[in-house]
Amino acid sequence: MKKILYLIIGATAFNTVQAQTSVFDVIQTSPDHTVLEAALVQEGLDVALSDLTTDYTVFAPDDAAFTQFLTDYGITASDLLADPKLTNTLLHHVVSGVVLSTSLMNGEVTTLSKLDVTVDVTSGAKIDSATVTTADLPADNGTVHVVDYVLLPTYDNVTEVVATSADHTILLTALQTAGLVSTLEDMSADFTVFAPTDAAFGQFLSDAGISAADLLANPDLAKILLHHVVAGTVLSTGLSNGEVTTVSGLDVTVDISAGAKIDSSNVVVADILADNGVVHVLDYVLLPTYDDVTEIVATSPDHTILLTALQTAGLVATLQDLSSDFTVFAPTDAAFVAFLAANSLTAADLLASPDLSSILLHHVVSGTVLSTGLSSGPVTTINGTDVVVDLTSGVMIDNANVTAADIVADNGVVHVIDGVLVLPSTGIIENNLSYSVYPNPSAGNTVTIKGNEKSTEGAFISLVDGAGKLVANQFVTTNQLHFGYEFDISSCASGMYNLIIRFENQISSQRLVIR
Image 1: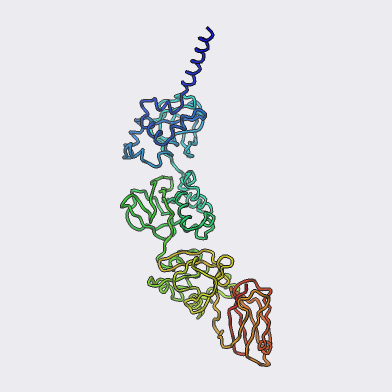
Image 2: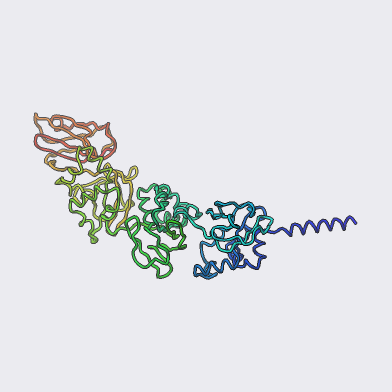
């Protein structure tokens, strides 16, 4: 008798375990939810919703709801199941925890898509625009409410699309670093964002041989990101073959011959709508491409003085020549401001200088020289004068640091620098005296200056740094110079200097490199 009783109790306990029902079981056993069931199974969400250790509330559109939705959007069930946004759409119907109809209140509820749905219980129960037709279907891990329409994720702005995507963490960090989040949250403007995935950025970083930190530290980060943004809302149905101008001021090429390509990137997910635009997901990063080196300068907010100087000197056409290649070391506006202040000059003084063309061409080297092709030593500019490259710590051109390298155009490359490269001699300076300076470069505390002139008259030795600032000025006799004068450079920082010697009406200028 006891054995029979134990068997009965055991069988009852077994049946109790087997009788447990998940929210997915509720959907699966419903004859009115075949489309929802198929979608959940395809996206692998049936496993999560069958987990009895976690509670869920599911707003479950029935087949009639899906039929109406498909009709409204002019798509088929196959189109729906092929939509790469399907997982997120399904998660937009699921809330964590058990929320019975008696607990629903007017307001916002956050779904597993990380976006909110709006609940309205003023008359019955509505979830966004869908009505709850059957409430509180029980399950052992939650509850199911049947709704009469499909809930679509809606984003407040295009940045929210990025912020709630698990595949766009690098893009989000980049937007935050560049200070562009608030720009793309602006509800008074509409944007179309081409959004590279994390995998797209990973491939780009690998191809470029840089790290994510390098990308985020790039002074042109904002321009690169804005090259992925077009003003206005452009849906995939509104794309056509041709050029589209981005907010960076440069064009991308659209090709819809097979799918949709933006430059060399494929649109892998299209038409993620927000209240201020739309996001299209890309499989590679779009890089700004420039027709010529002057376009790089012209589209940079940090090179307005350089652009004006090139225009004033009549050099724009020269640097637009697509039959030649140029390497341009481009001082920023801040570099020019520091240079002018150090020399008590105004921008007008610079633009009026008869040496303006020579000064600018002193920043240009013939051919395309990428940063990887630079080596320490002198490089002759188009002006016929030399600049000295120093790769000891980073990249220096004379006394200027390269702050952004390898901005490529169809006829060359631009390297941004933080200082103006000073000509070895300008204006009245004529190298009509013969003096030797050694060692040069010098890593010691002194250099020897030796010349042939002998006179009772004295000479002035001036040392000018790369920004044009006078750092030393000393009077010596020419007899001292004749026998070799030890000039003290112990207080000078490493860099490029002009050593100027004035004797009677004669002047000599030589380049001095201090290590």
